Image 1 (cartoon, protein in one colour):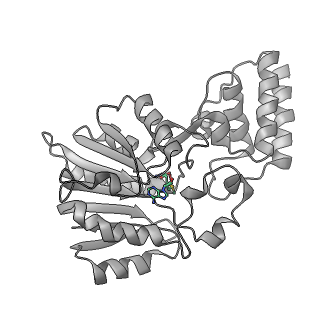
Image 2 (cartoon, rainbow, N blue to C red; image 1 turned 45 degrees about the horizontal axis):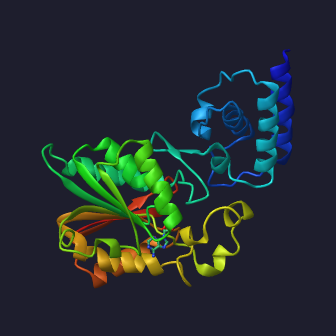
Image 3 (cartoon, rainbow, N blue to C red; image 1 turned 135 degrees about the vertical axis):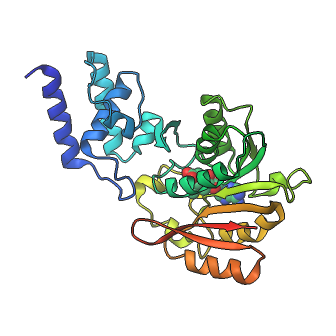
Length: 300
Ligand SMILES: C[S@@+](CC[C@H](N)C(=O)[O-])C[C@H]1O[C@@H](n2cnc3c(N)ncnc32)[C@H](O)[C@@H]1O
């Protein structure tokens, strides 16, 4: 057995013994974690998903082995893997990730996939679809959608200046600067103008939807490393969702769509509220593999 195999076995053993993996990060196992950190130590950052598919690990120099051991120590101390690799896989893309914004979760691909289908159906070729993503975080939704639908002009906004910074980095990383404009501000306030009123084809949002009380109880890997602002949805978790469903109709064109993620147990109430209080033509739940409502689509 060569020395690299011995190193792999030793480090994997440590991870198997000590690594605590969060339930919403099922793609992370001791093996994929080690693989991702190994690539990072070699100066070739890959997300955990990409690392899983690149199993031919390069030989490490002694300096790189030292870096790898340090990365593993930091991971075992609770630093999220994506913060260490600087990458997160989302809708087939290797996005930049950092502590500036929430690490995009796999569960949000459910919303992204539905929104992408809507956008593709609306795209006719010579159009300039107007697409807004609010609470954009790392910019994962607009980058994923705009990179697949050429006719779309996208706008992304977030209240956090740090998130706006990371979203802009992702837009630049994917060379989408001419097609995605990133703005800072509270929910839809950056778009309060005639340019957008009644003109938006698609509005997406993955808002904070955890109740303030529960934010304090989140796992330390989340609470110590990801911004509270990404999770805190007010006393009942639905403050931003309520604002979103109330403000969206002003921006959507007739036939335009609102698509947003909800927390477990929030979907039915939101749908009821949308049907009762607002003039959406159609409101439809999107269920995950456990048959829970995890996103809502509504057409004006
Ligand atoms: C759950 S994260 C979602 C991030 C990203 N869209 C994703 O899917 O991974 C929610 C985001 O909303 C932002 N946010 C919180 N309150 C906001 C507000 N009032 N207006 C705009 N953005 C807000 C946070 O900074 C955070 O980036």
